[in-house]
Structure formats: C-alpha cells, structure tokens
Length: 177
Image 1 (cartoon, rainbow, N blue to C red):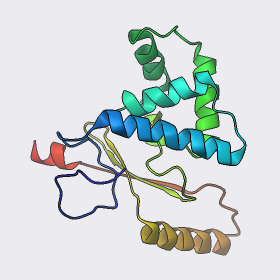
Image 2 (tube, rainbow, N blue to C red; image 1 turned 90 degrees about the horizontal axis):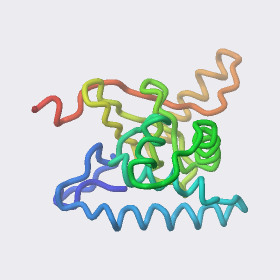
Image 3 (cartoon, helix red, strand yellow; image 1 turned 90 degrees about the vertical axis):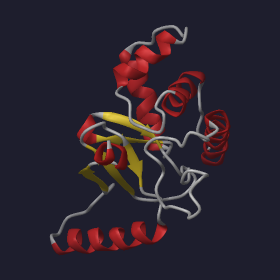
Image 4 (cartoon, rainbow, N blue to C red; image 1 turned 120 degrees about the vertical axis):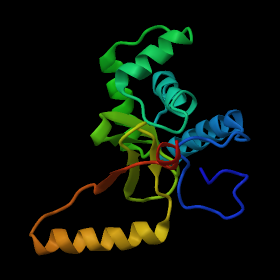
C-alpha cells in the first residue's frame, strides 16, 4: 500500500487511515489476489478459513490492527459463522508464517502486511492514542536497520530470528486533532 493518492510525493509508509478518495474495494481485491499468488508461489494453502481472517484484516481493519476477538466479532457481524478463537489464532499464525500479516505486540493485535511479496523486516509506527498502525515500507530503512540489528545481536552473541520494531508515538490525526 502506498501513500494517499492526493499526496503528490510518494511515501514509504502505508497510511494509518486511508485517504477519503481511497478505493478500499480495489485495495481489498488487490490484497486478496496478492495473497493467493503469494501462497501459490510458496506452495502454501490459503484455505477458506484463512482467507476469511485475511479478508477481515484487509476489509475491516481499515489499514489498522485488530485483536483476535475483534476479528471474530467482525466476522459474526457480517453474517459469517462465529469461528472458535483457536481457529482464528491458527489462521493468524499461518498468515504471519507466510508473511501476509504481522502481530503488533504492543497492541496484542494483528495487521495485514502492506507488502507481502517482499522479504522484509517489520517496522511499525504505532499511535498510542488511536492505535493506528503504519507499516514502514522503505527498503533502505529495512536494510540499514536490519544490518544494525544483526551487528548488535552478533556482538552480544545473540541469534535474532525475526526482528520487529514498534515505535510508539502519535499519528498526524491525533497530534492535529
């Protein structure tokens, strides 16, 4: 996902909230199509249950994070059968494993990956007021931070497995609002 279409300069950040002119239907269709292709490339199976959870993250998350029980509630509210929490957690575990979603530890919530077909670290800006989540989509930042974390881990004799950085702060709307 990229910056709002009414912003003349490209941004390396997925917006916390879509712009008013954002076509969320197209965003959802693109996200689901990318997920299908990504799973096909990996030889992984995007089952109907996994797809429904991803659909909620993409559609209902509004480019933000949702907790597992929020996902369940949103599925039930739109007429889907209310899934067991363990089923949702298993689907989320799969989505994270194949790079289609991320866990935001500070919120105990999940967000759809803004760029699932690219091997990347995970860096997020997390608003401490409204809980908006902005995924940083900048390869140079990813590479630089990755090298720095690898060097620090190596110096400490530590093997880092999946470096995730969550930076708390205030989003533009909360600062200006």
